[in-house]
Image 1 (spheres, rainbow, N blue to C red):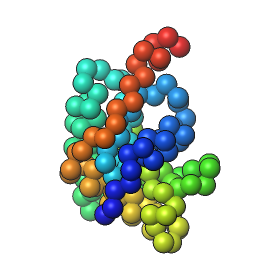
Image 2 (spheres, rainbow, N blue to C red):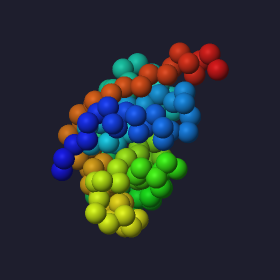
Image 3 (cartoon, rainbow, N blue to C red):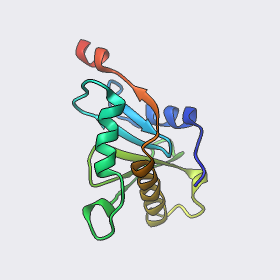
Length: 132
């Protein structure tokens, strides 16, 4: 599975996340872990969440997903059984843009991120959230 450039993924998540003050961690294949209670080492916190909630186990809730089309039409967000674990799929990553194809591809990206656990970016908005 080819990896997208981190800069492209960072830009996508900055556009996609509804809360501009959210603290989040990005993994190499496009999975984003939103930290609702950020504390301490953010990358370490996100790795713990993704280690538990990223790998796919067939027949379990870890295999579940939903697909949300991005407002700008550039791709999709694939949700998981964990409400704070989301994966971005760009339009050019899948040949057929149906929800099933997109969801299965996004789920496979989440699985790769959940097993490799390679952090490529940390968006630390704790100071901004505290000021709001």
